[in-house]
Length: 361
Image (cartoon, rainbow, N blue to C red):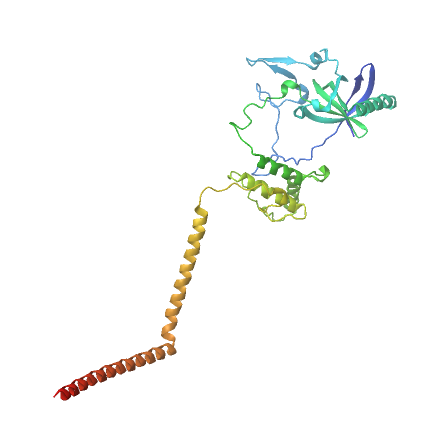
């Protein structure tokens, strides 16, 4: 790897010649600006505001703009004369526990390589001392025209240095936290813990940039003249008011299902570990009423259909007509019999009365 800076680590009276190498690389895809009309490249040229002419790099210097707009020229010679002891030295100022370094301060990362055979012994000494102490070294160094703060730690068998922001460059998180008092229930915390346990750990090497891969596929497709189909966008569910308990329960079940854990049910179903946790109860009784109403409506509709079917089938049924006619005839016969019986009863009564008269005479 190509070094970007050569100097030495100042470790008390020990000086360790080192080379500074970038520990990270950027894999982002960069685009060029073009003229849409003809596809020509858009380039930026450095032009002087006074004569509106393009200026070459060798004719460009530095200046500080004062509050009133005045330009104060600053040359490289001016900067070189400043008393900067860290111009070519990484000066260790303290050794502290790693947890004393706020991750917000971390910036670029570098590897420190021993520069030459004589540097191997003191380099190894510092590396092993850092390992045994479980501490990190806080140091000052100068890079690209300014003094910076750094943290030295051991990565495998190499000393790595993280550039740090100065403490006064870290902004206080004022106005960022949610406003007002927000109460989190124990049940919600339990479910959050369960979700964290279910997701578990991850192999960092398995993580990759899906978006970059999609852009690379898009570029390859367009370069070969293929038609690019837009990807289906899933519903992110942003802005929806959700039941937090139900969302956490579903998240736990989905995480278990994705990991293929045994006993993982469908989303929304509970398991033995969450028996004491229940979704928020609804205070309105409308759902039950709606269910009853729907059931009644379905029964009524079924009854109407049955009646309509019976009405349609009656005219077509010859047997029904015959049965009705037979019933009418039977009813008529019974009526006639009753009349005959009543008539017989009346004549019998008259005969009895007549015989009574004759006997009395």
